[in-house]
Length: 363
Image (cartoon, rainbow, N blue to C red; front, side, top):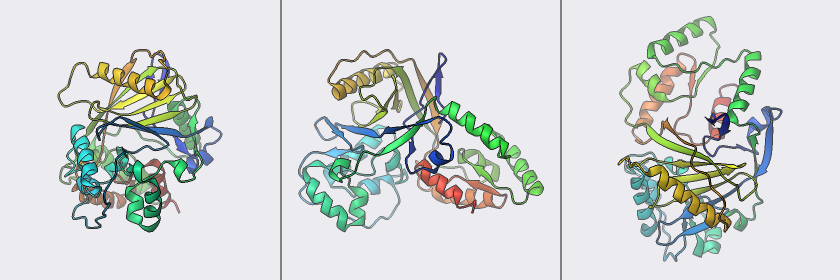
């Protein structure tokens, strides 16, 4: 989550903020956090027309659906099975979009719906029906969503560090070092990991060490079978632009015309999240900027001045692109516990869920 740095300025790496309910806010409230209303939209062109829907971050289907059927039978925990629970004319396009982005939905783990913002679909022609449907069925509530204004929810609020996350984390690190909690970054060698863990276990038997990095290196250290999930390369393009909303705002993108998946506006800046094409087109950054201008004009109705992209950063992320790795990850976690190492629940999505998991080991 550390920021991208360009010419002495900082840019958020992606759309990450601290929720009102998060304990992080309470613990580190004196480290320069500011409060703001959470605003978001979605852009969808998967179903034959362009739609921008406020107060909803998932795909929106704007046609009548004859009948909604729910299947509770799931033979595999794959992304395709999860998406196939929607009516065929919806699920087929969602699966096509996943393939377009370079993923195999038959192998990817179902929880990737959260990463892509696919966890709930809004049927805009069935708003009243969905209200009742969601009340009477837990599965329907899991699959379908409604904009917050139809749910009677007020705009929620969240927190961001005033000087960016890098500065915020540096302050946290100084605070933790005072109470003897130490960060050990950039451990690359499997032998170094095992030696360090064994040494710590001998010196401090009750020590709790938390592993928040990728499981790949740890998997090598334990000598387990190679993970089937391949690293995912994601791009973040950063630039200056006027924010038409005067506070942080993001829009999820579901489109077969661009590889942009989300745009995050904040201060006088923006971060565009996108996945590079396997064809490695030379003009991808230019097409990303053009799509950004299109979205900005549609959102604001005004031709705001947009500067060129300052820089595009690439980062490699570990994602469960193969659900068979669940068994491997369980093996890694169990083996690590024998050495006093608590691993990130890699199949969880969301910072708060992972923090709650770690907290359970501190009681």
